[in-house]
Length: 130
Image (cartoon, rainbow, N blue to C red; front, side, top):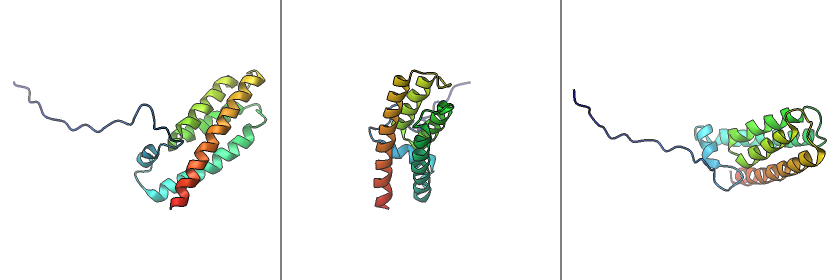
């Protein structure tokens, strides 16, 4: 029985390395099915959540690794990959238990603060265009 070869039009995969911006808006559009109102809602929620989590993380309390993990997941969902990477670095520095040296964890938290500030700036710019 002969094999029939057909041309298949493949859908492109998302990039392995996201764009250089603080928010990958193409990823966000895929996750929100291209719904502009949902994009705005999700970005607004992320901005509020990330600010709240940073406040909770500031003293590096016990359980800070879980807070960093939460922020990492939320950031990945909206395409804030630099925030997700910074949160992962903090989570690793804390070793999941908060036992890291204060210098290592503090440096990771500083990096997370910078990444969140950049993402929040991009979110404000995006929402103000609306």
